[in-house]
Length: 119
Image (tube, rainbow, N blue to C red; front, side, top):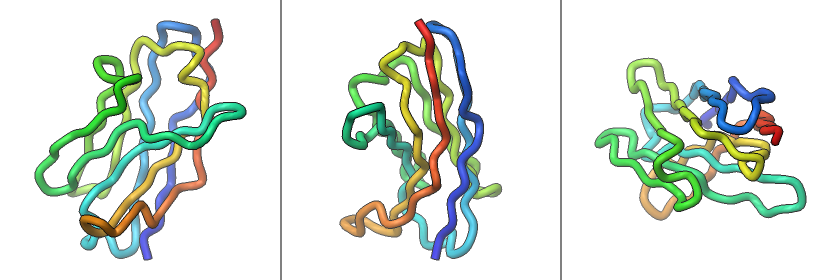
């Protein structure tokens, strides 16, 4: 199993910044990708960003390109999401996720951390 724990959410004004963190434990040696998803009020959960654990290749949703940066610290088994130029539409519960291989799906999820952006 892999356990994930997010932190760093909070309340910010439009244009502000937050940095989310996710600590992974358990069978971390099996992780191929980690990523961030979010679910806003009345919306489905959506993909935000992901990173290949070994290569560091990054992928972003169009809605956050140029504003959010995903990164990882392999030695610490930690994942980060730097969020800049935040907008009210970024308001959501943000979830850390992990998958163990190509085609394996996003099998592991954190409990989520709330991000609220006020106008």
